[in-house]
Image 1 (cartoon, rainbow, N blue to C red):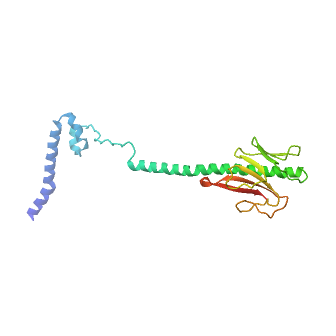
Image 2: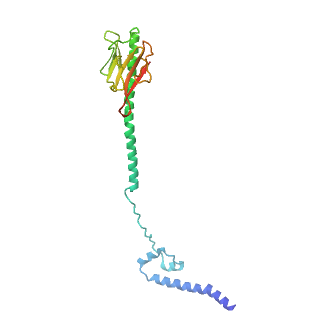
Image 3: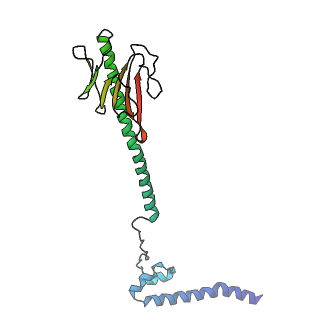
Length: 226
């Protein structure tokens, strides 16, 4: 039992004396070092009784490796940008011509309706008489309804209108785009046939045919009125 107590005492006190001697030795070593080296100890855990002999230490910040920022784009980013740009170009290439074509056709439709209104007004102002042969002409962007000496009517049309006529040979899809034709009589009834007319109308019927622009370079025959 006595030997056991001696071991316990040595463990508690003997180690303490040994640690104290080590600390004093460390203190003496640090005293004789160059001041320039003291800064290196700022990151060490120095015992409190040692720092009392050393005095205040100058702390220096640790070395931080600079971050290198890469510049430019990666191959993946470039490919993504090119793919998006290509998609936008395809959409624009397909959409813009269609929008332009729709705008031209709307202008033609408006011109045909103005012409139809002028013919109706002419008929009303002339006691129900329909315009006769050569009674519809185009000049300077204006359609004239009626012959000289009658109560003529006028309709302003779009610059896309290339010709205007009354009756005669019915226009077809082979006719030039922008052509307007006024049809009067029993055949002046719009339908879904290739001619756009039907023979079941009134003798005083009035319709207007015009050639519009279709997709893929095709022509469309349109009919408005009765």
